[in-house]
Image 1 (tube, rainbow, N blue to C red):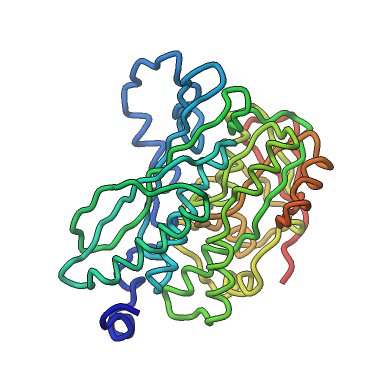
Image 2 (image 1 turned 30 degrees about the vertical axis):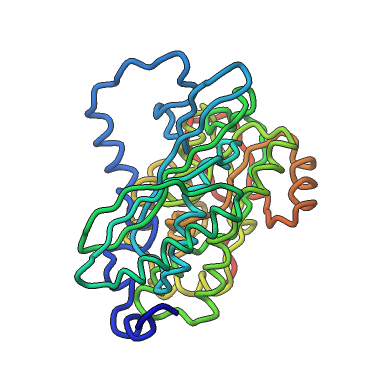
Length: 356
């Protein structure tokens, strides 16, 4: 380890500098919609294939008949206390938006805010090394970036990629009768909040880090191979927040089996102990008018609204067997959690219960 990094970590936990953990520090969906609705829309060029009209994961701009640019950015405050792991998580999360659109990343730029008077630059070097190593695993370079001083550390990336214009996995193309498949377990918001509160074991922290540093590349490739109609990645707005946006953009409804949703071992008890990020509670407030909760109690509702960081892909497909086969060939975790239906656009009916 560089310099006196061990001593610094003992004295100043990275998460102690953060007002929120990872994607849970995002503006809530209601707040974001309020701000954006007040802005006058700008003229949109014909080459812009995906903009911000449907809250999609990235913008897509046509370059030619067979190639389009995917552009996105993502950054957040520390979600774990290990600087290297935080860098890996933030980079994995940023690249996920490209994969969610069916794209292939081509390069990235760093975004950095750092409290230079409170944390050593050697620690920032570890953050950047984590981001670089994830970029290398994705097969892309990091070609620069921008940094500022800030009392609260923040890190993320601008991620650029390419996609064929006819193979964009937009969130607005969900048909009625599609199966909904989720490719990573939930519970990351509960665990990251427990980490910030000093309540997470080393084993639970490692399990969450392993999930958050798994690239969605293989899941994206499986989705494209199987001809899935639509997708999004599950991040700060939680499973139901992102699902609501998909359904609303596509003009359909959905039914979800809560018992089919997978959670990281140890995250469900945290919900029952009242561990929930502020972002998770904002998510629940946002989706509540659109959800028939069935028999779910408050902790179960919070779990389905839990603010994820670097979560999996939520894929809508009318060819579920093909998609499952493609995911299994690549060793990808997956669960069929529901179906889409004709109905009030954006509405969700939940059946079943979440087990311990």
